[in-house]
Image (cartoon, rainbow, N blue to C red):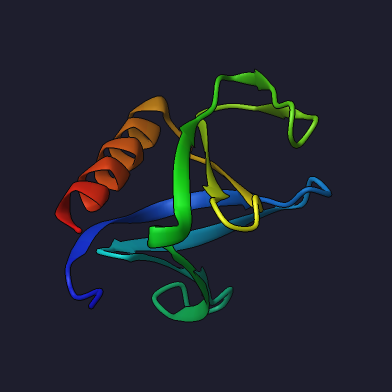
Length: 112
C-alpha cells in the first residue's frame, strides 16, 4: 500500500487561524505525505505528517475570500475529511501548479 509516487512539489498549507506554512508534499497512492525543509540545509527534509487520501474529498477553491477560512486565497484547493469534516486548505504558487495538483489527485483516486 502507498508505493507509487504520483506527484510532488511545494504548497502552502493554511490553518484556520490564518497561519501559513510552506511544505514539500509527496502524493502517493492512498496518502499525501508532507515535510518541512531544513532552514540551514535546504536539501534536507523533516517528516511532518500525512493525510489519508481514502478519507478525503478534493474541492477546487475559487480565488478570493474563502467562506470556511474567512480570508483571501489564490490558486487554492481543499481536502475535506468525509468522516470528521475537517478541512485542509492548500495554496500553490502558480495556477499551473494548482492544476497539476488537481489532476494528480484525480489520477490518484482513479488508481486505487
